[in-house]
Length: 214
Ligand SMILES: C[S@@+](CC[C@H](N)C(=O)[O-])C[C@H]1O[C@@H](n2cnc3c(N)ncnc32)[C@H](O)[C@@H]1O
Image (tube, rainbow, N blue to C red):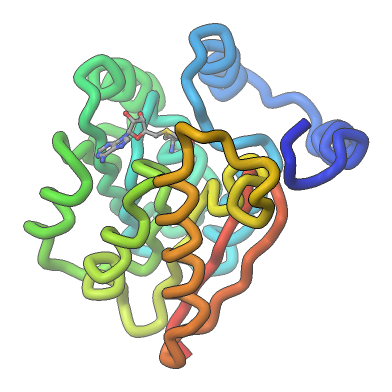
């Protein structure tokens, strides 16, 4: 039970998407067997759709893990975008590098090694699409940096914003997750209350917020 949508809905939608093939399926199997949290299937499809529509030339991702969503976004685009993706776990960085090499994308996907907040503070270039998928308890702290780094007509896609239903429902909140939940609520308030931004929150996967400038 995801706490966001009904199980029968998820099963049905995932059935429609069907099984991945080849090396993509191998990455998914590895992630599931080793407990690596990669984007859910319907979130992956949403990313593919958005990348296809937005046609970004530069993408910034927060949270590489094994490189799955970076590779997925690259493969879904027809614009051969330059992707920068931030990761702090040495183990994940090593796995992601191997996977990116297997897809022959080392010249297109660059891993920025370190903590998101440190790296975001140092970055000084613009991106067409920013995908936030790391440090759920810090999206509110990442946001000002992401807005500074976002192109005039760029979009920010933030995953896990409903966090297993805990963000909208106080009844579902686990004690040890209170800080993350409070900060995620702050993030959603920031992107919804800022009149210079337009945000749509989609109760899909673990909850997605998509934001652009008005
Ligand atoms: C949900 S996973 C990313 C999954 C990936 N986007 C995908 O779908 O294939 C989150 C990753 O972010 C990393 N991470 C968490 N907090 C971070 C931070 N503050 N700075 C850098 N990396 C972080 C974790 O080590 C983990 O590998």
